[in-house]
Length: 175
Image 1: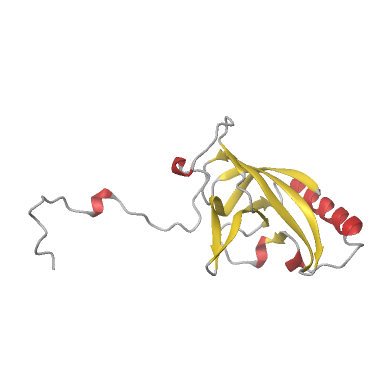
Image 2: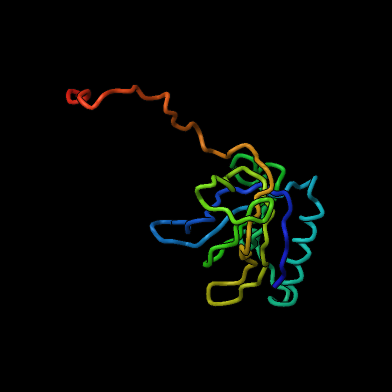
């Protein structure tokens, strides 16, 4: 296993306060972290080096396709913000630590971290070699809000100005 701290990366598809649900089943807590290929080349290189070491030592040099690695080329997917980035998906059955810039705990009601903001993340890379196959996975240990960023795919949201005010006796004949 190899512990890595990702610094100033964008988070996408975060399920940090509640477990993600896929096809009706809870899958765990997770987030996908976007690492800029050029500006954060040092972080990408460190992750790739750890992946190579895990493959060499734990998987006896097995050849793994890109679909068997937690680090993937963002240019190969059609999501906002993924171009010119690597994406790294990390998950955990246990809720990760979620803190603000000053290390104070964050709650879901705080509204951060959110999809598109910048975070620091603590992850642990590990090699899987079992009856489900060989792959390199990442466990999500913790997330620290770093700074605001443009929301991914949230679309528009409601506003109180969308509605008219009315009294208790109004509305009986709405339809």
